[in-house]
Length: 141
Image (cartoon, rainbow, N blue to C red; front, side, top):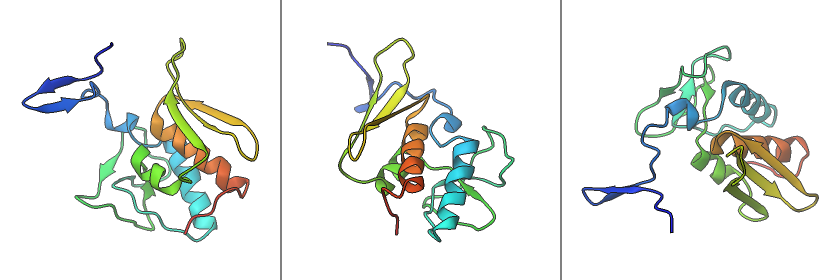
């Protein structure tokens, strides 16, 4: 059995303590694309993190505070958890691929089979949400 995390003072961590913030939220390109899609369907989904303009660099991620917020002038940078709340609760599976690439993958089998891969979980979930919205297979409120 492979140990995935470590225990320190009673807290179990996943071993991702050194992961940079920009690796835990959607990329600039996907953040911009999601923002445009959400604007097109007149939906505002707050996020805990944001970039202050569409041309921001990957590492220019800022935090609102203790709670997610929304601002017309900013680009939300969604976490995997925030995207998980927007995606349908059934029919989609997520896992880290155990091949040489080590990429995250996300698959949907209905109405047709699609598998999406990316370097981080937030991007995989963002790509799946974009696919579902663009193909009118999911709706957000």
